Image (cartoon, rainbow, N blue to C red; front, side, top):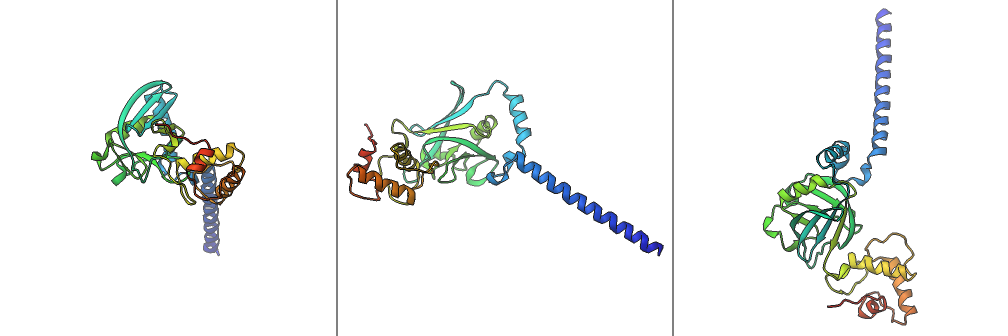
Length: 257
């Protein structure tokens, strides 16, 4: 009977220990999930090292409080600024004609150390129609050219240097000359197309009161098509799901040489 009593005590203590462990584990996960948005973090590292990295950022670069990035794909240069002060510039590779870089204003939403074709560092952008980022490369001869699938490539030593200055939320503007989101010309946009030019058409339809969704995603879907039909009807344009020169003109899209 004595051995049985001891066994029961041990079993009870084990159960209490396991329950306590599970409760603490769940509490820790909930606490972490409040501070770090794991669902939006596809690459992991930035959020796990958030506090350590931010503290290092403050220690190493205390004077840089307004860091921003401008990528000019007309000359394939990336400019790092603190406010209006140019800190550094780096040569980059940008998207090919058929896979253009996402022209527009974005933010850094993830950071990680990758390898292979992405080089030694990755900084992801919040582009809604695809996965785009600033990263290193194992093809350094492509730097200075329009050679990527849309991402901004950098030499590995340059991307490692930039990585130190960039944090979650850092603004990134990708520009191309004076033609803005239509930097690759006025293509005939059709349902299913994606890109900065599609987002600009959504923005213009919204400004005219035809596109009712608050979120502009740069994807030509059914809602955008219906908004386009209403706009064409009110402007006496034959209904056409493809955005051609006549519709561009009515929307006020004119590219000047």
